[in-house]
Amino acid sequence: MIRILLSTRLGERRRTQADLARKTGIRPATIHELYHEMVERVNLEHLDLICEALECDLSELIVREPTPK
Image (cartoon, rainbow, N blue to C red; front, side, top):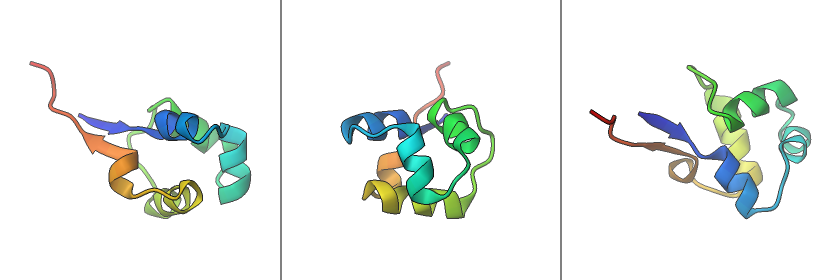
């Protein structure tokens, strides 16, 4: 299972979804969907913008966890 750790990263940096949307230019609705892991597809440009804004590597934002059996 692929996990998006945007909520964790924003919490660590004490930033809001609105802050991130303003800084990246990504629609607030898209940030909301990523934050709540409600997406099936992710725009690579968005990931790059988010990593740049949060000063993190992609591996800190997206991880793969084994699917529970």
